[in-house]
Image 1 (cartoon, rainbow, N blue to C red):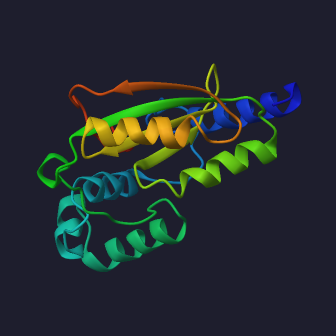
Image 2 (image 1 turned 45 degrees about the horizontal axis):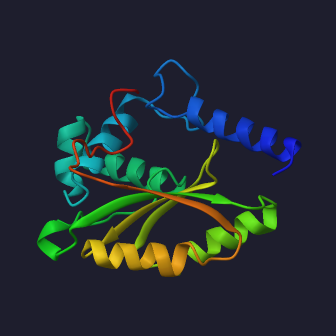
Length: 184
């Protein structure tokens, strides 16, 4: 990545971090949210299956305006969707690991090509382009250590343009919170 692209990318990432509601509640954020919106986000983040009536009760407004607010948050892209949180261990997914990937070349085309490859790897559940010594960080899950090792050796290290692969196996998850925390 050339210096201009790196600088622009860093500036964009910095703006995103600084505008995050978890960074500092006194920093500006991109969305125009009031205290009720933040309560709605916090409640839905904790239990996305609750009814609108229950949600409205928890946030202290009547059901019709609550539903309008949720719809507005969805339409604005603040609420991206709803998911079930699955128990990995009960499903036989015993290995959770992170891979830090360094590329030989960081041109926009090469970065996009690697990002596209991650979409075809079922073991990779989340992926980020990052700054620093690595170019990508992959959140991986596997049924066992052998499956993870096979992925690293046969897929990652043999992928065109991959220079370095550093892995970190997790021992135990100690926190699992959504994006909306204390900041509002």
